[in-house]
Amino acid sequence: MGSRTVVADVADELARRVATGEYRPGELMPSVRQVADEFGMNRATAQLTLGRLESYGFVEARRGKGFTIRDVRSEGGMDAYRHLFRFSLSAPEIAAEMFADIVEVERGIVLEALLTYTGAAKTLDHRELAATVDELEALARHTVPDYPRIIATEIALIRRVLGALGMSMQRAVLNTIGDMVAEVPEAVTAYFAVAADLHVLVWRALLAVWESGSEPTEAQSALFVDLFALYHEKVIARFDDLLGITGPAAEAESA
Image (cartoon, rainbow, N blue to C red; front, top):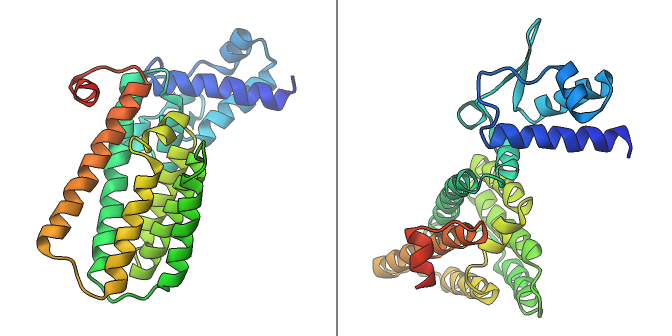
């Protein structure tokens, strides 16, 4: 096993301990010597390991003190939060809480984009959008749908809408959310709490509205918002179920 693999594996284990609360914000990380002793590596490799943890945004080097654990959830940026979510899976309650936050942010961005574009002047080539939805449908029809590719294709569609609206910050956040979800198989599966072909039907309906040139009624918009919220509730409940969490939402889903 090469030192690079050792560094990655040990850094991931230390990151897991931070993510699950075994190591708490404000505390000192184990020293280079302690890491070297625990994992049977030399001190140079242990130093690299802690440096990798710093690159995740989980610790901060303090001169003369070593590495201090950061409060990643309150102080970290999107990339640090992405790592935190990935390493939190061994603490299901923490992972579920984080996933619910991720879904809420994603829902807000996507809903705002779709509703705003529906009521705005249409600047995208709908033939190109339709071709992408055709690709989405072909992926959904596979005997075993390629969920990561379907999600990537849907994100690409939303990115184009956000670009047309000039919502560059929302697009950047959505990019990171896509990375967060893609790195966690349970999160990917949860986004298909409803069948993949239903994702396609939503896009077909949106295209039909956009191509008609007429705006939906208030009742139609309200129905879309309600259905969108219901879908995301199912996504969160499915993730909880995959992690073995039981509770009111999971019980209602299984009823």
